[in-house]
Length: 130
Image 1 (cartoon, one colour):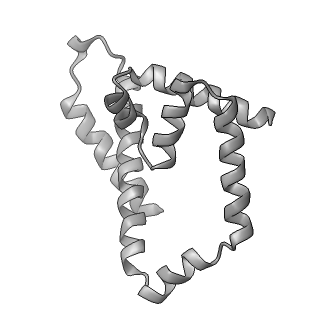
Image 2 (cartoon, rainbow, N blue to C red; image 1 turned 180 degrees about the vertical axis):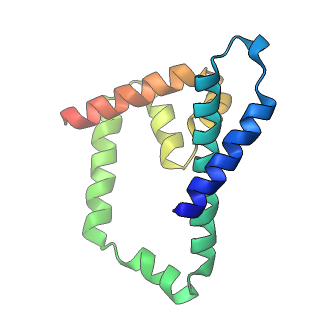
């Protein structure tokens, strides 16, 4: 945790060097987004390293922890959600279930990231209402 803070501070110093005021972006916005995404990338890398450190038996057990009933219930919930979604929302839901991120989905579906985000927000709202 302390290492992450120190690395974030160093990255913030690097942001100072790369900041260009002519881009019409506030320093606070630029710095926040830069450091936020740095921390997010670092966290993702740490999680992947931890996955690589697991024994093959532990990885196998991770999949076995869920029983058939839980899988069936999740499948039924997804079907219920899909039933109330529009065709475009279904496309987004299917890609999200396959593990795609909003940027990747927008490229695949040839829609903007904002549109994909709106569809995802609508899907979550419909799921809450069920």
